Image (tube, rainbow, N blue to C red):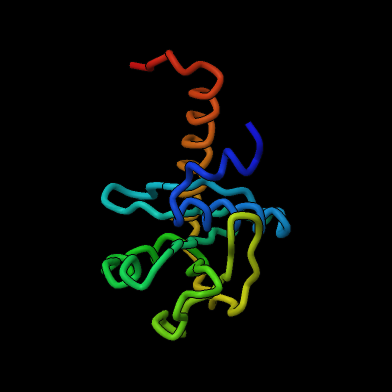
Amino acid sequence: MTENENISILQPGQLLARGVARYLTSFNMVTIEEFVPIKGKRVDIMALGPKGELWVVECKSSRADFMSDQKWDGYLDWCDRYFWAVDQDFPTDLLPSDTGLIIADAYYGEILRPAPEHKLNAARRKAVIQKFATVAARRLHTIRDPFFRSA
């Protein structure tokens, strides 16, 4: 399967997440898509930086997608920086000006507006990083051994 055939099956938000994840590697960050830092909260992308910094990126593929999201501000307590990721045609004036902005496509992205930093306390940072590591390890294990189900 070619790269273009592979991405043709992705939804618009997934295409944005793919490009953002690629872009964040330029900051030596690693990412997990659809990460749940705590029950009831699912972020599109959680990024972990080389110094333990945590960024949340919410990918919005349309005005309707953004307008239906009433829970985004609940993610601010789980990251040091919060970003929106949208494509170049998105009406960015809808997005809160006190959050970061990434313009992306399926292949890459660029920060247009840096997100303000709100450092997590040490206990929460440790808990989120441990969960990040656990989720990443479980997902890798599932790829390696898709028929294994732990107790």
